[in-house]
Length: 206
View 1 (cartoon, rainbow, N blue to C red):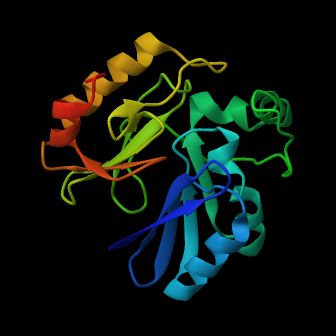
View 2: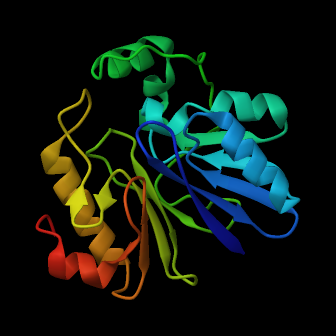
């Protein structure tokens, strides 16, 4: 399986395009959609699904438009973050930054729970704190964990937005460390790729 990083949108959100030669999957779908569409089409694979790490607007903004182009593709999110995808929640969260939503309501097709497996074989790990339904996707055999806005290089996601909890994110970080290996690569929702070992050594929150 091939994994390509694309940093997209005004919040420099990292999303990832995974391909197996036939199907493609996205981990997060930040707007604008046109760059994502172009990169997916260049792979020659059809979009099978969009796996969201959480429901904040800077990670879901292109999901609806992508589904219009690939209507057979599914949108997956943890059950606890489904409320964040409503119009009212998007408006509230974007107004936090003085912005206004430029995309419609996005409805998920697949509701995720802790321990589920993705279509590409990674395990869903529920890691609340940044949002109630934040998740990581962990591929033990590949040595890769997609951490969304839970764990960054030398940092963590903010917890001061509605639904955030510092105590929960601290617990989630301990959970990540407990299930991963030092050599595993950390692919976050913003910033640079890292490794678990480096985060243990340099991240003040671990």
